[in-house]
Image (cartoon, rainbow over all chains, first blue to last red):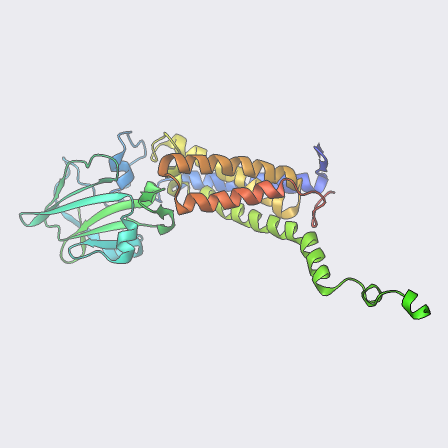
Length: 173
Length: 146
């Protein structure tokens, strides 16, 4: 097959076809796990008004409190697969990695009785209303890929999330 | 007198080393650049196909949590993977580099529009320049013509 002054032979076309099939298989896999990249309490999800049509992940507790869900604690944050991508941002001064994870995001934390009141949003947008986390003692930002943060912009909010834990490290629901 | 008419010393020993190195670079640098650009596209293509949820934030206008954004990321990753193989294997490499340049231009414009001129954006400008350059170099090595 000629393309301008270049030619693609049979072997070349066969290799491209095989790559296309392999890519299609990978795409099917990617579609099946499309929700797995999102950390609980996704900042992107909370900052976007569009509804999330995915089925709720019942196996993974959400740090985003719902008005109907009873307050309680979930599993230990350390036992979650995204634990190594969680950076402590409150209390205390966030580490350099935590500050990078916070790129493009703004988080407001206040004590509320025995728990915390937390609001998280995207820089440049209005901060959503604070949400109570009864029993909350620590706030973590979850950022699975720091490479998408640059300057004051996070180019991929899909991998950002917020987790509030109790003093013993359990996720507050 | 006869000695004065003989060939100069450098003509007897062939090209100077720096000329040989220059010729070697001219012959093989485009192929090496093609392999490296292909590796970059392959990495991003595979990553977008395997974990599209991490890339939907780059899709302009659409919500990162929408299914349409995931589909667009998967399609983008699929095209990147094809271009990567074409560049690495040397299958119509100039055309593949030209298509890659168009896709990178779209990425640069999108990033600049949403986040301004950041280090990430300028890094992609450099990759765009590499693709543009490769699309204009004929007679490259390591080409699969059959």
